[in-house]
Length: 270
Image: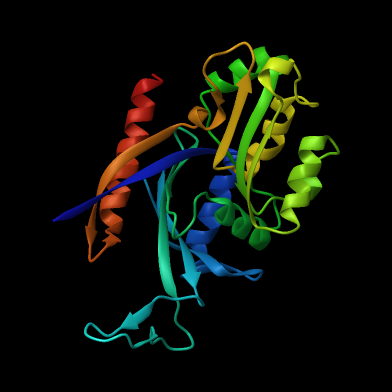
């Protein structure tokens, strides 16, 4: 039996009752898979409910840029054969608990790193806005709030930024300019620490603008601290070993580990 270590993150719906209502509607619709008219590359599959616990997975349907099959003993290769109504599927499993009010989501680098597509499908189909916000400890954010007037350097990695959410500070303008030429941005802005200069906007405000878009790196350096403030350390996460077969995660194993996350979180907050 083979295993892989994966990461689960926690999210909180903006309206928990509405989120449950939408999930119930998906189950009752009997549509399998459950799709959005505006998103052909993602859908909801295997959604079930038992005792206040919802489980299922968000499918990333890859239609292009698929792996190739190569000959073992020469250099020839060909495209992966598939029918026109087929796609390569990458699964991001999730569990939602009515009791805790939190969504536990499997981060899948080949599938989805967050449940944004899940929220978008529900919003589009039922015409009522669903948002899923990261569950954070708040420790690093509190440190940033305390030291926000002494930040001289930031490091940001983010993809698919929405420029409309940003303002006109020099930092935000740099991000917007970068987003016009590239999907993935790696940005470092810095004053010489010895000069005493600091960045020209509240880095806490910038973090709150970028947080919903889930940057993969957001580190602030304060002239008053020896160690940087790493905002991604605030994310509540779990790492688990799940069973795999032929390189693919076994869904039942993923659901078991998601339930372990739910139990561990509930026990730590009793």
